[in-house]
Length: 117
Image (tube, rainbow, N blue to C red; front, side, top):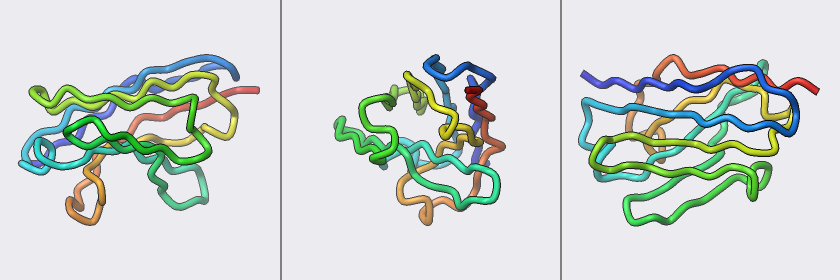
């Protein structure tokens, strides 16, 4: 049974930091593939903001580059997202999943991040 459990969200002021965690289980894709953090703001499509493969190659959306850092512990199928210098436009529900997400259609509930100005 596939499980994706995101945590660590909350309410923070602009300029603050949060660290998101994702525990993934139930699919070999979580061990052998690239993992990513996605976000979805109200009325907008879900977008990929950061990805990381198993050998340490990371990619970031331009909107978060230099502020967010993705990491993973392969042995635990756990993925993290360190978010610094948060902006109100970072407000969204954040999800983790494999990259590309078309490989694994199940999504967790996500974790809400709200950044106040």
